[in-house]
Structures are given as structure tokens and as C-alpha cells.
Image 1 (cartoon, rainbow, N blue to C red):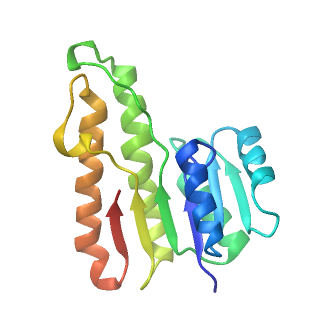
Image 2: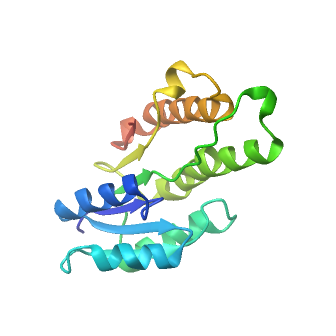
Image 3: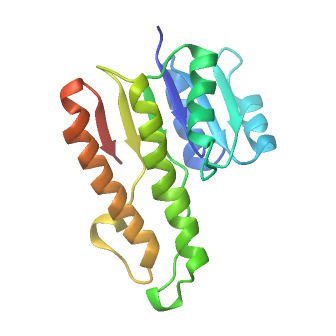
Length: 176
């Protein structure tokens, strides 16, 4: 089986760069995002020989992790890499942060990656990897960082836990 990756938030700037870098290494890529038109535009910009498929779904939807992983297995027969790139960049001081802001950032930037990891792990083994896009603000916090910094710190904890839990099985977990 060839290498296969899932990249969430694939149609954004960082997401597209990740998709292109993986494709240049011969990795088949499934890109996810909420906007089908943006995913199709990305597909149209990629080299014609790149193995790319996409699935438009909101990573916060209850059925999204299973749909994404099932699509990947169906298209390419396996899963080697999960790149948790989708995120919400809501910045506000704690006293100005609404419940809606909290729910959005936790939903997109912590709950979705956690659930995708949980769905992907049974399909992964030695040589596989989960990479999560973090932030230095998850380590040091920042003025007006509020929920954004808290969630990025949570991603660091999740990544360290998975490294400890699944590293002996040969599954790497890193945060960038």
C-alpha cells in the first residue's frame, strides 16, 4: 500500500501547502474542508498526476470523523498520516469571550482533532503518524489569547498523551 494522508482544512493557505508537500513526496491525499467549491478549486490547481480526493464536511459534525476516514479508506485503501490542520482563530480576552466563541474554537480546534484521531487510530500501525498544527501560544499564552491559547495548550496535551500511548506501536504523534 502506498502512503495516504488526510489533511483537514486543506483548502486554506497552510492546508494547501501541506497537501502540495505531501503530494510532491508521492503521498495520496484526502483533503477536507467545509466548502466544496474551495476544495474543487484546490483540486484543479494541483498537478494532474497527484492522487488527490476531497470530502466536503464540517469537522465539527458528529458523523465527520467516520465519513472522512471511510472516504479515505474507500479511495486509497489505507491511512498513513492524519494532519489536523483545521482550526479557528478567535482572539479575545477572557472577559469578552462568549460561549459561542468558546464552542467554535473548542469544536474545530480540539474536539474535531481528538475525534479524528480516535477514528483514524484503528487504521494505523507502525510507520504511521499524526501531526497536529499547534501554536507557540499553546505553550506561552498571549495577550487576548483566551480560548485560542487554552485550546492550543490542550492540543499539546493530547499530542503528548498519544505519543506516550501509541508510540510503542510505532505511531508517531507530533505537534508543529
